[in-house]
Structures are given as C-alpha cells and as structure tokens.
Amino acid sequence: MSETLDFARALIERPSVTPDDAGCMDLVCEPLTPLGFEPEFLDFGDTRNLWLRRGEARPLLVFLGHTDVVPPGPLSEWTSPPFEAHVREGRLYGRGAADMKGSVAAFTVACRRFVEKHPRHRGSIAMLLTSDEEGIATDGVVKVVEVLEAREEKIDWCLVGEPSSEERLGDVIKVGRRGSLNGQLRVFGVQGHVAYPHKADNPIHRFAEPLQHLVNEVWDQGNEHFPPTSFQVSNIQAGTGAENVIPGHLDVTFNFRFSTELTAAEIKRRTAAILDHYGLDYELEWRLSGNPFKTAGASLIAAVQEALEQVVGRKAKLSTGGGTSDGRFIAPTGAEVLELGPVNATIHKVNEWVEVEDLERLTGIYERLLANLLLA
Image (cartoon, rainbow, N blue to C red):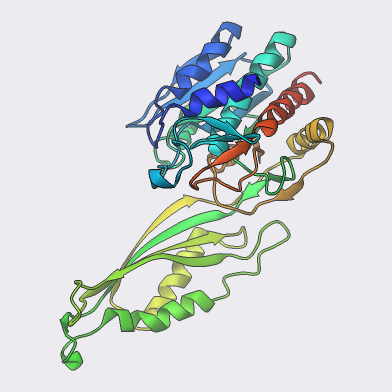
C-alpha cells in the first residue's frame, strides 16, 4: 500500500466541510513535528490555520494547501459515502480526494521523506494549511500572511497544491491567476399589478438592455499571459412568486474574472457608467476576491519543470486559467508562486476521485522539488 494513499484516506474520512478542519491539521503534524517542524496555529473566527515550519534560515519554501472541502451534495448520487475513502479500479474516491486532501497527503509524505534523507538541507521548509479556502476566504491565508508580514517572515517560494492538471498529472502548472471581482446589484422599480403596467415600473424589463450591454462589452483583449476579461451572471432573482405582480426590485449577482490589463477600480467605473447610461435606479456593492497575478522570477518554475521531467518524464504547459486560489494572497509579498496538483476532472463533483498512482507520483514530484531547491 502507498503511504500517501493511506494518509489521503485518513484525511478524507474526516468530514471537514468548510470552515471545519475536523482534525486534519493534527494528522499532518503527527509525522512532521518529530522531525523538527514547529506547529503554530493561527486561528481567526471559525477558521483554523496551521503554520508548520522547519528551520529559520532563508530561502523558505512553503507548501500551501487547505483541509476544508465543499459539501458533498446529494448523498444518494454517491456510489460510496463521500467521507468514507474507497479505492475502485485504481482510483481513490471521496470528497476532497482531488481538491485537495490528496495534495496535502503528498506534501506531508514528501516533506517527511526529504528531511529524513537530508536533515541538514539548506534554508527552511514550511507548510501553510487553512480551513477557509472553499468559503469566502476572509479568515484564512489572507490573515496568516498579515501575521507573517508583520514579523518580517518572508516566503521565497510557494507551491500551491491545487488540482492544476487537466488531462494527466503534471501537464499544466499555474503560474498566475486572473483577478475575481464580485458584484451584488439591486435594480429598483415600482411594484404593481400586471394588468396595469402603466402604474408600475418593472425592474426586470429595465435591466434587459443594460444586461445585454454588460454581456457584449469587450472589457479588454487579454495579453500574452491572460485571456480576455469575462463577465458572468451567477444569480438573478425578482418577484413575489405570484403570477400577477410586477416586482418592486431585481437582485443580480455577477462576477468578473479579469486580466492584468484592467484594475478592479476600472471595472467598477465602467460598470457604473453602463448602468447610469440607461438611467437605472440601483444600488451596487462590490467584493474583490483577489487581484490578478503572475509569478515573479523563474527559479521555482525551473525547479518544478525539472522535478516533472525527473518523475513523469515531461514538462508542463504554463497557464493562468481557471479560478482563483490562495496563492493570490502570497504573490503580493514578492514570493514566487506556482500551483501543481492532481487532475481536476472531478473537483466539487459527486464521486470525486484521484488516481492512486498519481498520489505517489505527486509525492515524488514534491520531494524532487525540495531537493532541486534546498540541496543546491
């Protein structure tokens, strides 16, 4: 049996639905604290955060991950219980198998193996885990970074274990991420009877043209590292539930995934200009999940590519696509940040799985990365 597989199974069987860690971080500490890793829990609100560091010297390599998972969804659609780890036909099934308890297990085993072989490695190794990645991420890594920055504890390299691979392990590494800006819009109208529309003002009708404008707007062309900025509506709600009532207001939730060609301030200004152009009566609240970033420097990219060649025999494509990750909180500190983890085919889905073989190979990649950076 694979050591990483056993560890991943133990993590999956702890139902750590965000923001509950369910004891996962305690499991991670057990094999590493005897090797000189010093645990520090930096908890905020309902969120548990673990800063687990070995050594005080620079350079500092950090493995960044999360122990929380999304809810399992309809239990009747799972072929086996989501918080009971099962292996079938070479795959490990369970909530969090790919996102991202498999990576956390690989981090842990790789660090243990490397330190046992090379106890006098240069620099320092740390693991940063949070139970607040799948939620709104207000009390997780963003708060830990504030603590580290306040005490001038600088990260040189950060490897995020998000499931970056697309078709096979190691075919893609994320070298940056788009920004994410969320809007909550309320369009006001006048409630009334559908038979007397002249005595009412339908906010749904009012918003039809502005919505079309927002959808068709070319926000930017992207650049060599990022695709063009996109606008997507995720929720629209209006009405009392009655067939014969014109609603008094319309609520819209939308999101921008934006490139480095734009700032959040520019998006806000242009959105307001479009809404104002149509004379809407509205309120609009914004929440910035993260700014776009592309990793600085090339040493981490080179070390990861070398590790991939050593373990899986190929280099990865570099990408900034997909959603956001907690790497967005590390990048502004000046650290080099990359994402490398399992195939993302089933993340957040019913019957989430990861290839058992990939767990051991991912462990090997992380161990080689440690050697490439800390034995030089």
